[in-house]
Image (cartoon, rainbow, N blue to C red):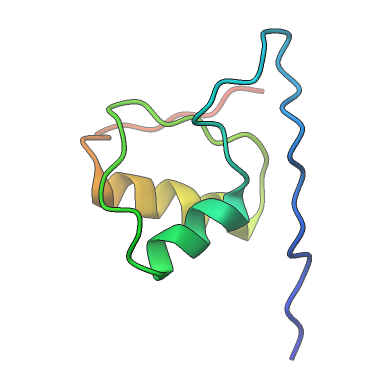
Length: 73
């Protein structure tokens, strides 16, 4: 059994300044599992790929009004 990388990247690669509600995937999922995350906004952007990004998108959809998804690449 392995835990995987728990650190994540806290650096947002966007050219604009980091918004205050930009969090790593692990922080997002940890807050949800602890019951501290009750809702999300109408738009959620998940940067990255893999199983963790799918988990974040699924939780965000479950918590908010996210009705469609897409990829850009």
